[in-house]
Length: 224
Ligand SMILES: N[C@@H](CCC(=O)N[C@@H](CS)C(=O)NCC(=O)O)C(=O)O
Image (cartoon, rainbow, N blue to C red; front, side, top):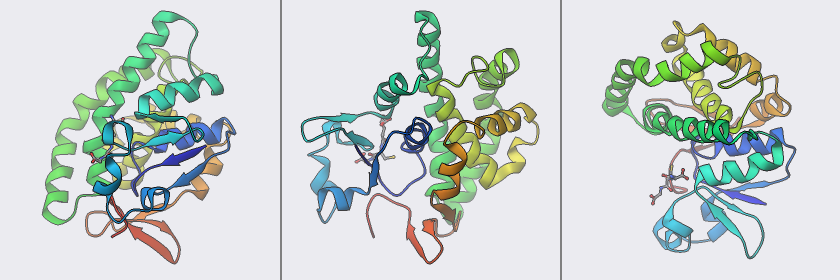
């Protein structure tokens, strides 16, 4: 399988973590390499519904929408509950995690200079309301959101909390259960290895780049 996504730590991260957790072989590929076009606008029309990530299963089958991809993989990784009501709640909470994408992933992965400062200020002010319902679940059900077992929504929640912890850890000072959640999540099979080997984010707020020592690439939709 091929996972195609831009150079951001965002929608594709929970998918990558889940594939590593489930030991599912995949190749991560940037859209310019996958499509071989000059600009994103030249490829967008060939992508179902015009957004990334996509998961290319084989020559005939491509999945789109991160939630649908996560649910497809969750059936292979035993991270979808069997109970119909619990399943619906896990779906709902996965959808709720998308509220973190712009305030967290875009702020630290894409915004620069004054805009970065404004977005971080805004994040600081909205964070308590964004986090509260997740925190209530951790208090009721912990260590994961719904039980002592991680479901697919936990992968998305972890991704955002890990990014927040790494980029502005002080914002989590009043949320010890999130730190416990992250530590427990990191003990799941494949996660520690994934984290050690994934690209690092540098230049936050100034010139964000993702990569490895000696080869960092500016975050963004396209190569330049
Ligand atoms: N609902 C989609 C949202 C994906 C999304 O917004 N992707 C952005 C990148 S982070 C994108 O493809 N933007 C390119 C465009 O809209 O042309 C999902 O969850 O997969």
